[in-house]
Length: 262
Length: 232
Image: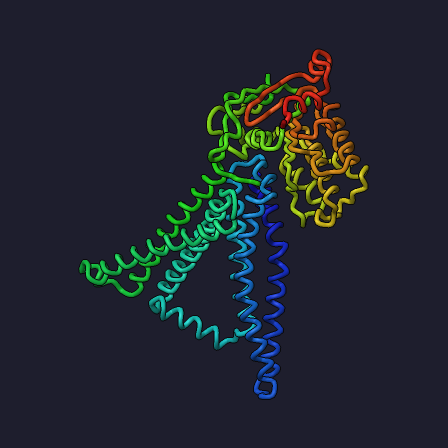
């Protein structure tokens, strides 16, 4: 039953995302073409610049639109009129939340991948690739092993961060819709409440950690840059997991006990 | 064995007592009118039966189970609102219902759609309000459910559409199933009802077979309703 829910959720979300991805890649190709063809022709420089600016705006818009789609899809299909069908399907509340989470996460990953790909289409040549890899090596400590470890940590953090971000949105929408009036306004308000609470707790924890590392034990003082970044990433992952878990429980609780369909 | 049981069921919204310790048993094979003025608690009772609300106290049982995924397999619910995704076509909706409800009879749905000349390829957003409501009803009544909960199925549609909806209900519900129709348009539905539940301010004030009202009291359900809910 969960797989069927996933299938329909994918169809509902990606019917809008796929054309957007196609458009972004096409724009990437056109931008590359414009930049290459124009080359050093000063008379046409303005067209090349406009193409690049349009492309950058389109990339930013794709990321924002994906987030807007996730918000609209969750609020309409769970807390809007469509919620009458969603919430009376023979599947539990966990199944409904998880299906939305998986599809929203897939949407974010796909948008990220398509934006990267389209940037690659516009800008990538052999020199750029070498320069990118050199920068990454420098960031993660120089050796191939540390590069892989660093990359894996970053990817892990991005995954957990993306899931936590989606769950924060779900929790804010679910709390906001439990009010009789101004549901959208309360959803936005509670998103800010959750976001600033999380940021404050995160900042306090990070500053406590940094204080401990800089002025604490001798072992901590001897940490390499790679170890230090590894520790910070690990703690960030744990913090995001906790935030995500709390937001998941809040969403579940609101849907289970305080569902407020009009 | 009752298909729907309420034991001291209460629900409150803030300071408003929507349902106050109600006790009801609905047997299979009956068409029951849940009748009351606006704000009397009809929709709250139906939402509780669907697990869309949680009781404050007491319990509600569907086929001796608390509302959950298992009861949702046997309850077919038509809400007051339009719950269909407007981007979907009729065919996609049929696929959706086939996927989620083992008791969904696609052939029956297609026969009803064909009778109304509704094209399967047509999207919901291309339909009029009345056609959307008919599609919703067809989907709900094409399930071979044990309990049909219909919340205001004839509210907001013209008299001709009302006749179609009522005919669809009586022509398609499973003989062993119970149908609960919530409405305040008594005169239109009373011809198809076996029992009535009068509800007011969260209390069940009458639960009688329609025959008793007609034969022993010598009144129509509509007349009795007007008498019991007189505003002045």
